[in-house]
Length: 132
Image (tube, helix red, strand yellow):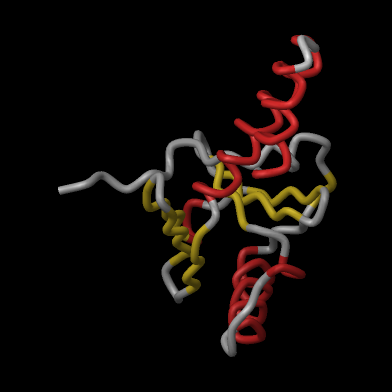
């Protein structure tokens, strides 16, 4: 992000406004990625994502299909979408347990992942938990 902001400032100072707008857009996208990064918790009931912009949860019983693309896993319900970061980026001692639980739930429900071009659009839909 620092690189994009620095490049944006440099291009504006050089009166290269079109290039500056490109770096501004990249800086905004990078900022979104930073604030949406967080922790995932897998349990017997579902999966939860907690980050700066909110807490999201999808129950296994609500999953109707699963899509993959660019390493991202998308759980899709009737009117919901839950994004799981690429397993290659997972960390922590529980990584293997989380993967086994995810596979176990997919096998139990008979859901087979399908490739998707839109899986790379990493946003949740209708799975945000309400703040009380």
